[in-house]
Structures are given as C-alpha cells and as structure tokens.
Length: 435
Image (cartoon, rainbow, N blue to C red; front, side, top):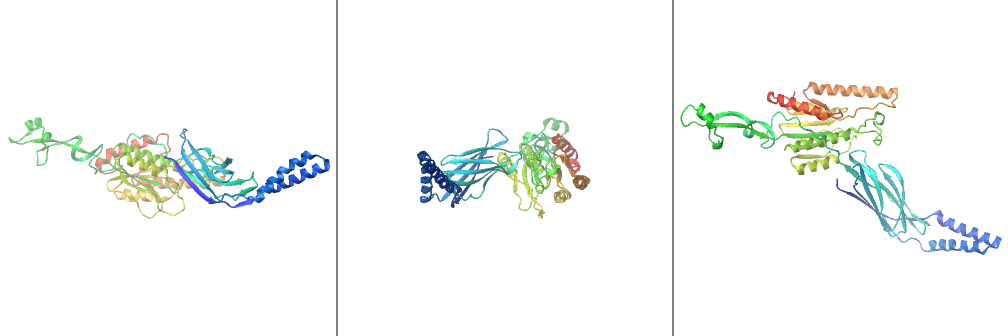
C-alpha cells in the first residue's frame, strides 16, 4: 500500500504549570538559607530561578497554534509500518503521547523542527490504527504548557497475502467471448468440436481437405473442421463483514484482536485476494461485494488494473458488525460463479448463497472461521461455544444439501479443496449442475 498521511491543526490554549511556583519557592528557600547561614553563593544560586520565573510571568508564550502531521509508509520489514510525526509550532518544544496498535507505548519530547519516528508491527491485514498521537506544547522550560490537542490517528490498510491457486471452479455456462477456458459453443482456439458442411461465414482456412476427400457426398461439397471457443468466466466475490472472530475463542466479542491469532477477516481478505488473483491471471472478469449495509462494491473487470483496484478495496475492508443486516441482494451477472466468504454464524450470507444457487448460479461457500482454540474457557463459555458451532454446522449442512460446495479456508491446504471443486464443476458442467 502507498503511504498515508493524517494532519491535525489545533489552537493552543496556554496555562501556567507548577514549574513556575517551584522556581519561586526554590529561589526563596535558597535566599533564606543563604541569609541565615551567611552563604552568598546560595543567594546567588536562587537569583537565576527568581529571574526566570519573573521572565516567564512577564512574557507568556506567543505560539497560538500547532500542526501535527502523521505519515505512514511501508517499512523494510514486510510486517511493520514506519511512521513519522512532524510538529509545526512556534513553541520551544512539544511532548507527544504515542499510541501504537491502540495501546499507549510511550512519550516523546521533540524540539522545533525535529521529527519523531516510530515503527509499528502489523498483526492483521485490513485497516487498523497504526499510529496515534496527542501533543502538548511547552514553553519557558515547562513554566507554561498548553492544553493537550485532540488525538490524531493514522490508519494503515495492510494488504493480505495472495496464495497461489492452480485452478478455480468455473460457472456452469461460459458466456464470455475471450479467455482461456474451453467453451461449449463454436469458435476458435479450443478443442475439436465436429466436422460440418461448409456454410456461409465459414473461413476457407478451416476447410478439412482430408475429411472432404473422404466424406464429401457430391463434387464441390466442402467440409470444415470446427472447434470450441475459448471463453472467460465471470467471477463474483462476496465477503461477509459481520464478524471478525479470532482463533482464540476467549477473545470473541471483546474486539481485542491483538492476542487473538488470525481472525476470520484475515482469512476472508486472504481468500478474496487469492481467488481474484487466480481468476484475473486466467483472463476472467472479477467483481467484488462487501456484504454489509453501504459496503464497498467493485464492478466486474479484468486485467492488472482491476487486480490493483481489488487489492486496494479488499485491504480497506474491515469488520462492520453493527447488527444491521443488508437487505439488497448484490447484482450478479448471469452465468457467474459466486464465492461467498463468511463464518456463517449469521444466516444472511447463507441465505444469499442459497438464493443465488436457486437462481441458477454456481456458488462456492468458503468458510473463513479459524480453527477455534478453547483454552481458558469456563464451563458456561464452553457450552455457549458448542451451541454456536452446532447452529453453524446446521447452516453448512443446508448449503451442502442445496448443492453449494463448501470449502474451509483455514484447512492446511484450502487450495486442494478448491481443486477438487474445480474438477467436480468441470465434470458436471455438461450436466448443468455444479455438484
């Protein structure tokens, strides 16, 4: 992903700090001790403190605003993000409270014209807050301090890795005119179809002279060798964003994904980009839909530019589990194969898959729930987890019963399951069914 930038401009509201009172108290104590003990050196030591306090009182800070600029860019390490914090202000120096990954990691002090640098480890793909800063300006050696500025944050959308898939299932009927898949209608580029009498529109270069000499019934009859057309497949990827569940069951519902292991959205984004890369590599057209109210949609397209658009959209998709179910069915072109990516806890994604399958589309349901880790669960939590998993198993059984191929992406080799589905689809395409 290209670098991101976030800027905050805020006015400065100044207030005196205890440093000023401490300076006057120290000056009085040192002067008093010097008079009592007859030590002129103590009196001389307290005099600069008093003068500095008077100076701070008579000449308050003149800086009126501060500008905080956060810049994020990919680091040399693929799992990290490099951040730069630039502060533009007329104050002497600033204090920065730095948050990384949603947690307070420390405080940094910078002088005018000095930038602070950070490195944040990215644990998950998709959008996440990589760096956040709260600034406070200081003047006259800390005698004056500004009210802390509002918190400014920068979000980094990490692209998932794309796993190589050798072969994808195809739709039941290919309607494209260009591509790398064997079609079911006459054309050029494919395998042998049949021998047919020459008809208007046939090319002379397709005349099979051997077949003509052997099979022609009358002098002057010509026979042409016909082949199948090479077609492209219309691929639709539908990613359910209702849940973001980690492998550690104890973190479900807490939103704490830092120690949850790989999450369902991580696997969903990875599966979506892997399928899109494989399909576009084969010359197919790919469309993308995020299954959430107001979710992102990318129209069908092919080529390297479409893949880069898909990469950016998929990297920017986060969980949207606000409890609102999407009501509008995303448009799917006729003759498409639809990959529905979901945990299938919420029945909305399964309902869409069944609706598309009943409408004649080829549908593959990809289960992106990580393998649950049940450590540190109480008896009640274990019972609740088993109940949820049983309900989900019923949803998956309904999908299989309706002829929808179900693939688990968290398996050791999810591509093997897709290859099996591809062979099943290729075998049954002639019969008009995916399975």
